[in-house]
Structure formats: structure tokens, C-alpha cells
Length: 231
Ligand code: CA
View (cartoon, rainbow, N blue to C red):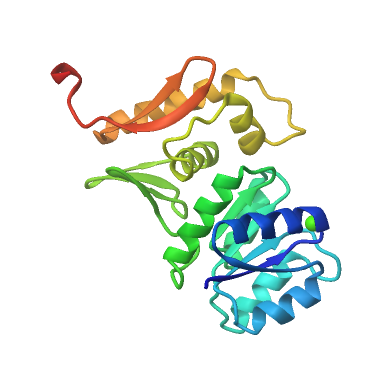
């Protein structure tokens, strides 16, 4: 049985997460404050930790930093309140394996969890793969074959969401919320603009990956197995 520790002070969210994880076949334990969370996580009896940032007593970054300083290498999935770049950089600096922006879909959380469990022991900011592309969050860059192209912070975040949710449609509203945050006024056309930047970069890399826009529903990544002319 894979054991997951949830450190989250919103009791209803912690209970919902525990139900979700148990339904998915994991064993889940919850704790609702920072110091207890650190004590349990430092015990090393868990295969992964889901760690909220804002916690009473001790915040998620302090817990993570302490765990890594003590050489506890349990994979950590950090929950951030919103898509805020400085938080994410702090999370990665402190040794988080992954971060997820609230609110998130159940499937997205389970996908992230599977990813961090799979690469348990790897370092923070490990690459994500889809088809022939590799997303390197630390650079940040997109790599295909021997080619590499730099990404902006927003492009990185959009591509990360597309890869983590591969095959699923992501609505423009979801992307705006997760990449730009709740309280940042932004033009909805920004998503389209950034998708077009990413499409150009995929073309420059010669990748078989396409970003498909499904009218009024959203975006998803697809792999073109055949050349356009062959269909
Ligand atoms: Ca909290």
C-alpha cells in the first residue's frame, strides 16, 4: 500500500483529498498544522507528501526546507494558493518535486502524484515528457531531438499544464485561472497569444506534437503520427 501524508489546514479539503486518494487505492493520513506535519513527514513512513503552503505554526516552505536539510527525500507535491511565480520558485528551491495550483481537478492531482511517485528520489524540477518533447522546468526550455528552445515563465506553465493533463481538454478559463491567477486582470486573448507562441516553438523544434484548439471547449496536446499530407 502506498502511503500518502496530507498536510493541509483546510479540514474539508484535507478530507476530500483523503477520500480521493483512498478511492484511488492509496492509504492517506491527514494532519492540519505545520509542526505536526513536519514531525510525521520527517518520520519517513510515507511514500509522498501533499503539502499546503499556508499552514498554522510553520509554513509549507519551512517544512520542506527542514525535511530536505535533514535528508528526507520523500517526494513532495506542494499546493499553492494561486499561480504565483515567486511561490513556485521558492517551492522548487526548497526541494518540492512538484507544485499544483489551487483550485485543481482531481485527475490533475492524481496525475501529479503518479509523476512524483514514479520519479521518487529525483531532484526538483525534473523534466516532463510527452511524445517527442521534453519540458525542462529548471532551464526553462522545451527540448525535441537535439534541439532546445527557451520558454518564458507563462509558456512554461501553459506547457506544463498541457503535459500533466495530456489528452484532456483544458478550457481557456482554467488556463487563465491557473496561469494568471484570480486577481490579476488579464485579456482572455492572452491564452491564444501564448498558445500561438508555443505552436511556433513546437514547429521550430520540428516536433510531432500539436496544440489542438477545440472550438469553445479548450486546448489539448496531440501527437501527429502521420504527416498532414498522408491522411
Ligand atoms: Ca492553508
